[in-house]
Picture 1 (tube, rainbow, N blue to C red):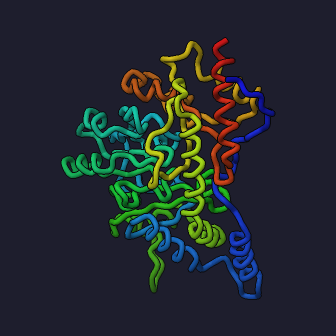
Picture 2 (cartoon, one colour):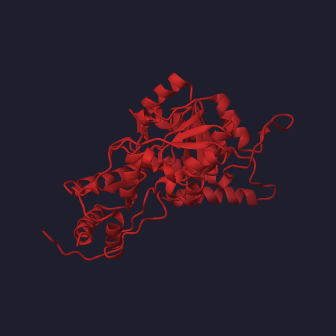
Picture 3 (tube, rainbow, N blue to C red):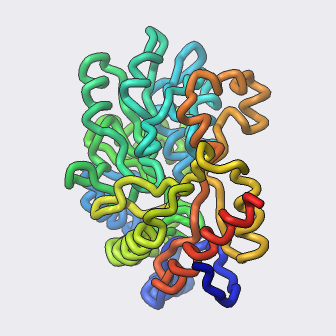
Length: 389
């Protein structure tokens, strides 16, 4: 039955976490200390404290704080010696840097298909893509739902190929009730502004249980330095450091991340209930404790409608003012990858190709209310009717 509602705007927010007075106090404390006579933004005890706390939270032996997930991935590729002639297997349904971190090292990206339920890289599809040139397998914990870690562990055990997880969406994500940060060779996290915790707009981390690998990553993120009685430069490195202020905020953000995700999970669960029975919309899988709740990604079931996603989103965004985002276009559709010949890869991954035409993310955040969820669901139902006219 049609129910009249007042149209109101629900934007897709630029901030995914929560900033409060504790974050402001952390920034001011560092700046005030640096401004005193003899003060400085070095050394970085906050970095050590943040790294230790983050490693503990994510179930890993070590964490290395860096300035983005993109640079975290880049560091892992360098630490593993990825270069020309190598192949890196990953998913087409991800942010562009999951692929370009390998391309930048001269390697070839090989796309494998995704699990149709979870939208994560499928280990069975990966097995079909492995060759003697495969250097790394790079799964993504998509939207905050853990990939099949056991499946990828089995591949690593059988082949010796290291698994690097793109965990940009996955702070607090758990697999079989264990944090994902200790799985594989390493995991790469993001603290960019729309993530569930954020270090002043940008930031990231690498977690690992491999002490030798951690040290290589640490050296490469700091100009190749080895600190000691005499400063040494032992490898080619860069400045991929997180600042003192950002590490201080990382600690305050980490202290409340579980509360933030609990609030997001409540909104996700409410939206699941609101969209139950809407057969044109495929709801996300795994919305339960252990999901990182970064993105609430639904799919338009194009087998059940006569219009495409663009038609639906045109109505939803322009008439009903519900901000939506697309996470993500297929990687091969980006101009830079198309120019490198990857546009021909769509036929290799039919499940991902279809999903990439269907997915869109709804504006669910820590402050989203039950009333917001009810309005969004109502707007989707109305838009489905109007897009089909």
